[in-house]
Length: 334
Ligand SMILES: Cc1cc2nc3c(=O)[nH]c(=O)nc-3n(C[C@H](O)[C@H](O)[C@H](O)COP(=O)(O)O)c2cc1C
Image (cartoon, rainbow, N blue to C red; front, side, top):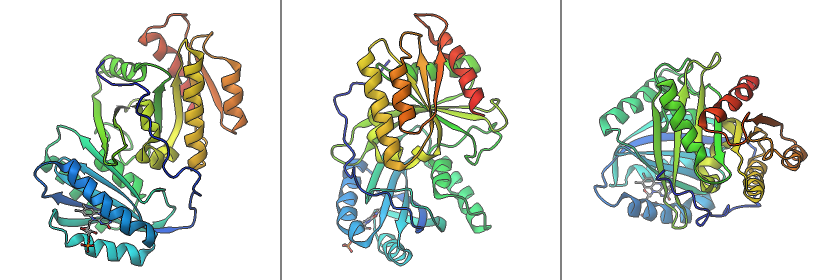
């Protein structure tokens, strides 16, 4: 497995302790063609420095994505300030052809002045562009969805066979307490179910942000709406994007380990992230009889989250055993 799942580069929540805003805000998403030819990461960092200086005082929070030769920026804050920022950004020679693909007022999801990510994918700019125009058509025909759904449709499109391709399917996060078994499990499952596995690497544009992998697998035949499994790196839990999307997860599956301290650590981190965004996903403990201890369950339930046990039949499970244990738990979430 090439994924670096060491715990050495964990970043803390930079704004931990900050109040999660709940009042409705203006929300806007645009896409533009990037004109930066080289060193996009350096350019993102320069943009971040401007954004950190300007956005905070204006009450604006943004997420900026670079993917397949395009920028996508999601802005939240006072509507007038967002419009002024859009006008300023539109003059910037580092991109062109700005298309506003979402505008609404609603619940805020971005809790930091700036989140940056670069997604490395083999998708070509013209293919990405087609998806931008699909979103533009939807928006211009009056179909206004949540900005998070627009972002997901661009950054993590569903496989065509998904019954609800616009993102209305349950999303399940998989995290391993140790090693990279969550990634191994969905890689194995993709092969077993003959479904494409989408591999993405996120480079955080903050200096201290780690480069993290997040792979996903869509299971169109699962239940009525299909299901998406997303394997995240442990250090991804500290990323602003994970934070913004945490409220969309129905459940977080923790692949437990023989090392009880590692199990404790991952459950602590999941619970801390959920507290930050006031979200109550079901926590599924996936492991052997010995790994599924009652103190993990009690800790989860004490925070008001539901705990669900997915116990493997064998003491030394292989990936097939893990899936056999997890599937009934996922069915029960329906
Ligand atoms: C794709 C993209 C997104 C940007 N996002 C922001 C932002 O959120 N906030 C910000 O202040 N500047 C942002 N900028 C930078 C502005 O366009 C502009 O360069 C910067 O604010 C400096 O403006 P000034 O020279 O008028 O001070 C962005 C630039 C690009 C290319």
